[in-house]
Amino acid sequence: MELIDHLSDKAKQDYKLVQRAIENQDQRAYADLMGRYRDSVYYMLMKMVNNEDDAEDLTIETFGKAFRRLEQYTPQFAFSTWLFKIATNHAIDFIRKKRIKAISIDQGFKGDSGENYVIPVKEESLDPEEAMEKDQRILQMRAVVEKLKPKYKKLVELRYFEERSYEEIAEQLDLPLGTVKAQLFRARDFMMDLMKSTKGSI
Image 1: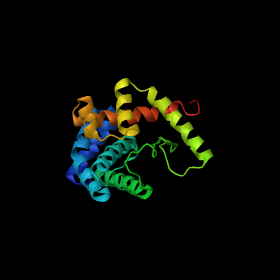
Image 2: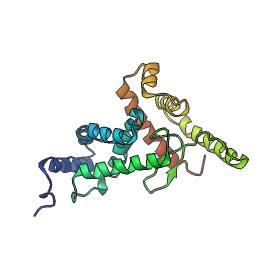
Image 3: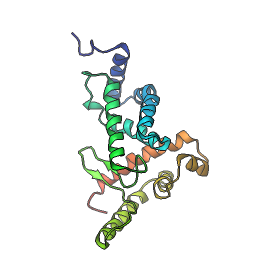
Image 4: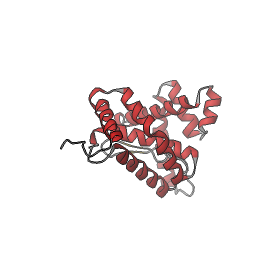
């Protein structure tokens, strides 16, 4: 019995796309996987968080997590089962932490080895020491943002520091909504890489 004999035809196709993505860094394979499940992941997350912006952010982050961990996937289960598990866990974390946004400034990013890179925001009722630490982290975060390319820097500032909606950003920058979302996704990846490379030096 072959490794994927137990899978459905669609799951077998998914597995082939996964293999192409891993072995060949095939961008079309990544795009096809996202195209197959983006809507269903979004609608599932929408039911969980009941907010369009939150569901959009969670959807993009779910695929980001899945694609970074793609080599961990095994065909013991269908790719869709694995993907929905990542989405569900991410949404549960979001709900548990009661964040306003799915990828809020304060939630930050999780590195490949598990370290957490936090993007701080203002909080009420901080004691002086906590307030000083919070201000320091904001300065560190802004130092990272300054290293982004101008187009990504502007997007991050509008989305996370000014808390603009995707629609507002698209209108202000005269960009298609899909472009705004895709570039913010890339900006978050760049920020994560910058935060890893500058850890302890900013």
